[in-house]
Amino acid sequence: MAKRFLVLLAAAALGAGPAAAQSSGDLLFNGFILGSCTVTVGVAGTLELDGDGDQLSSQNPGGAPATATIVTTSIGYRVDVDPPAAFTLEPTGGGTGVTFSASYSATGATILNNILAGLLSILGIGTTNLSVHASADRGDAFPPGEYQMPVTVTCLSIL
Amino acid sequence: MPLHSLILAAFLLGATPALAQGLSPMRQDFATYADQFAIQLKARNPYPATQRFSVSVFEADWRRSEARAVTPVLTVPPGETVSFLVAGETDAREARTIYVCVLSAPFADGNGASVRGEVCGKYRIMQRRL
Image (cartoon, rainbow over all chains, first blue to last red; front, top):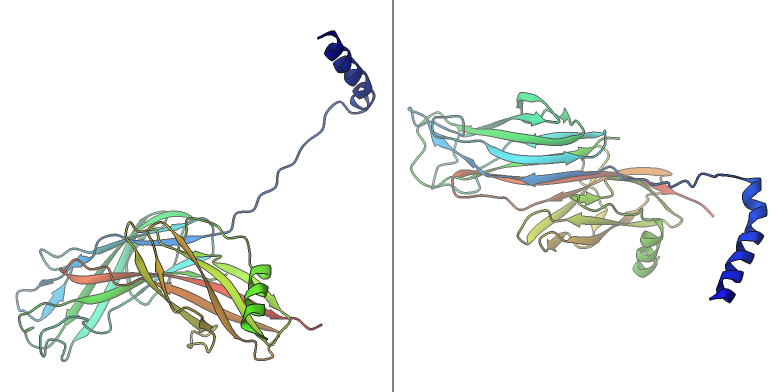
């Protein structure tokens, strides 16, 4: 025990010189976080037919928008929504003469209201809650059957 | 240059990946001393089920690029990250910008509108000469 005490005392004495020359010092920690963007699809939308039977839209009564969450950790990202180009599921003749459209709105880190699909929007830093409406229109009534059309939500690095 | 050399170069030149994102890194400059390049990226699946992501490569003007993902379809377990390579020619350009996009399969619940999530990173390939 006494021997260990002497060793500690000697160590303290040896260290006393440099410690007296510099009483304090800063230790620096550097870090770098890469910017990131995550797209997480929420729920798929619900299409409903209008009264005339010639429009399938998530904005018709009973319809619902699709949702997605985008999380960014830096500036330099945009969101793009690609409107549907065709039905991926349709009854025979259901896709003839159809025009498609979509729009999107956002809350949270980015505030957007009813932006036409195809127009890019700058994303804020943080969590953006995106809702997307889609429509399919044609001159005459849609034949009965199951329909499905895809919308793509893209987070794009622009810097 | 043999592919294994390009893969090694990709590991050496690649940036430190960040976790918890769809695509990592999202932007980066890569250097190559060869007439070809291969860059290593990571795709992450934030969903609670296994996902199949398709990888596409575009030029700076969004034309389809001749550069390709070595594995164009990735199967990623839930919450996991999978590395993949994009390889192509430098075309003797000193700097070349490409976009790499990772696209999810459509999410649909049978109500008519399905959604696909996509993340596109922007990368510069810098041609170096010895």
